[in-house]
Length: 249
Image (cartoon, rainbow, N blue to C red; front, side):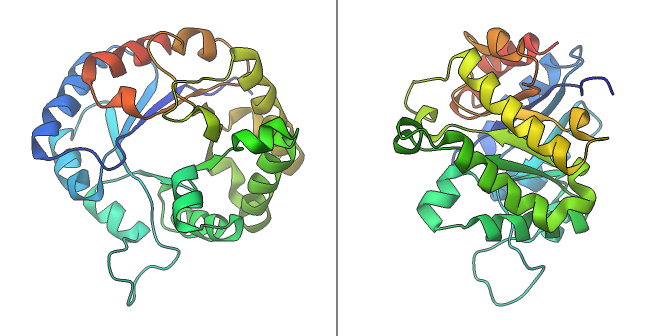
């Protein structure tokens, strides 16, 4: 199987009011010639408006999280079905900020992945180690444990997920794993996916999510097992995001 088309996905986190749709439209206008798959995951308040603004174009819209249930007495939460209804086609799950700040376990991330897949929305499943875990030599152990939980629950349709490796120590810190460091972890994840679904592993996108930016994108994306990026701050401004998209062509 040939390598998958790169995916460059922007995670806007808790940023963006209605005026920010101008940036999304500028990304759509500038990304028209790219061969990469491009997505923006805005706050939930903008999903429907962004989907409407970008309808018919190359840029897809995603959510930043979903509940492991479809409905119920869960004030403030959003379901996979609601995201689809709003126009999203992807959803970020298990981001380190959710794991650390909200206590999300590997098992909960796996359950969210299952409900996303069951409802036809593509999960971008995040895995990654903290600085303390890296310094203790536990990087491989941690990322394999996190991915194993998802595979255990979703092995029958694992080919439909996207994986994002996000070294926690490189998010919002200005630090970035070297291409060799990132590739080493991506290779571990690829091998794990191959063990779970050998015929599909080469086609499962594994994104790098540790402060990829315009300056380092081309070098990171040149690595064999890096199939795109999950971009944070650099996705908020169209010119910066477009430079990363251009590096993925």
